[in-house]
Image (cartoon, rainbow, N blue to C red; front, side, top):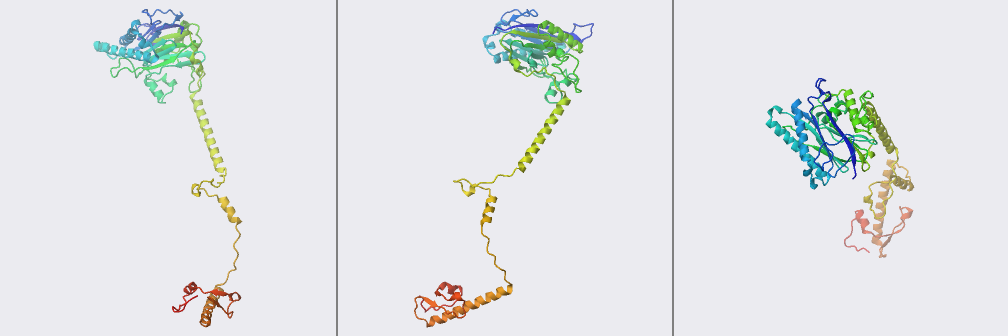
Length: 452
């Protein structure tokens, strides 16, 4: 893909020991191979433009642990094992064919380094307890695959996107950060920030590297470093709890000010780390992409902007919650205040059972439209009783007179004329003989008499 880059690498005992022994006891080691297609290693000149070969280039940083001598040995074993695995004749097409196969191969090499350190410990009891962190970066075409164990880090910088941390520490304080118990700033002064949870040579468990692959492009700068640098310099501008900017320089600003020379960039990092009170061995590898495809990292959000303080963050969250509560109350008020729409009659084809809502307004309207019932004047109890008695007497007299006439009357086609004596005016009518009337009034019947 016609990618050109330049790189620089350097390690120093730095601030870990007294001035009378500035170079003794450096437990860090690094390794670079600018061209994995040949057998020549560590030949890259600082700031020299190099064309990426078909098998890519390799960068390794290892930070030893377990004492002055043992830690240095452990990191050296780790570097030598990786170097052996990346010999030119071992990188077959099956290994380099895609990012997944390259990732698996790096992890295989790291696990082999873990076994080599443990084997050395068994053979040398005096070195018991030694170990090392490790981070490996393999640049192949426009893809960077990294794999790591421990707290050595990998960063990716771009002028338009700022700095980006690619790795995530395998450490005790990082686990506290993941659980929300610590902030990024609090990890710097935590008394247990030197405890790692994954490493090479741990006798209690096998190495378990973590990996990631990202695309790179023109203008990107890759930084691999030990915690001697990342523990002394913050990634970007950071503010304390009082809103004050930390006075020390940050990695992002230093790289931004020195993109024209990786050598000057490395020296500026060293000077700033020393000024901030470095305390450990410091190792760093810087790789700048000079030519190649456009960087996909320019679309990321600019991470170089000052970060808000925790105090302002809490205030902002509280304000947002208050706004949400006010809006919720307003919505509830409008919902209950708004009148419910009238329920229309169910559409054709739907039975009344399908509609469970009663249209109270329509029922009320129908009731109002009905004519009022006639008003009947009230009667006293004595008048009601007299009316009932007169009615009974009238009916009895009527029946007796009618029965008396029936015996004298001839056949008159089933009709009987009732005289008007003692009867109301409207009672002078011809009434058909009705057996049902007799039954209702309990009138005895003559079984020998025929009815017409």
